Amino acid sequence: MSGSREATGLAHDGGSAPSGGARRAQRPAAEAFYGTIRLIRRFEERCIDLVRSGDIGSGIHPCIGQEGVAAGLCAALRPDDALLSNHRGHGHFLARGSDPGRFLAELTGRVGGIDSGRAGSFHPSDLSAGIWGASGTVGHGAAIATGLGWALARDGDRVAVSVFGDGAVTQGALLESFNLASLWQVPVVFVCENNGYATTLPAPAGIAGSVVGRAEAFGIPASTVDGQDPEVVFDAMAAAVDRARGGGGPSLLEFTTYRFEGHHTFERRMRLAYRDDDEVARWRERDPLAIQAARVPADVRDAIDAEVEEVLDAAVRFALESPRPDPADAFDHLYATPVRLRGSLFGGLGAAAALDGAGRIFR
Ligand SMILES: Cc1ncc(C[n+]2csc(CCOP(=O)(O)OP(=O)(O)O)c2C)c(N)n1
Ligand SMILES: [Mg+2]
Image (cartoon, rainbow, N blue to C red):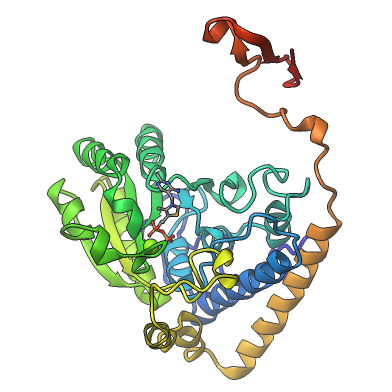
């Protein structure tokens, strides 16, 4: 078993909105949100252990503290909607129903991973969960989501979603995406997870004007919403998705949130003085896990917690038992072969190196 949630019935598996016909998604039960947030929290805590043991070589960008956004927004989507995630995206994958074992195998670079261990934590995709990619190139997922939304609108009522951080809103690609999405009324929802920092830069020190002001300048309706409460996130997202699905064009939601951990797990080894402990403590008082736990009876919570541990035990086992890729296959699955790396294509300098039809390098 790879830790699949199908057997567990945990939370919503990849969206609660009905297919076709009725549009607006129904808000899931309180325990479904609790289960999703608990799964993401414990998954990432296990990931941090696996970073420490050297099994996740890249480290991770933990979303601990921000899980309410992932849980709320993904529940408002239909399984066939498309989401573009970013470098802090584990929560989006799990909330959309990615298999925890195969996802963890991806993070640990194993062949059993959702992308055969080639994408890792920063650049995975999982079409089976409606995630068309995650990009570490800040802000660029918005351009992909806009093009994808435009294409999806040719054929049906699917919606594209782009999730990015506050650090992305100064990127030109994002603003160009706003322009075309508005001009062409693309069914795309832009989601900004504003956690107050871009690495160590406080958002007010990096953003002239405001996040919502940028979207409004392009005629895109936008609002700022509490990202710590998954039910509030869901309601805002369901309205935005409904609007896009019904032909009303793009919108932007800025969810205010906070990461309890550092920008990346490297911060566990080096103390960076860009935020004070009081600030972290204040945000911890609005922990999405605690907010949602208060809405679920203790015995139901206990059962969910036990189930999450079972799923994650199986996921860790699956990941670590999965073989590592064969280095000889490193050039498989490239888009274009043969590709000339050097040689005549670049002026005939040096020895020609290219990939043969099987994707293997030759000189
Ligand atoms: C185009 C680009 N510029 C710079 C970077 C380096 N970089 C990696 S993460 C990051 C900060 C991102 O902050 P934000 O968008 O707020 O997301 P968060 O990490 O807070 O979730 C930066 C600048 C990058 N990956 N891509
Ligand atoms: Mg940020």
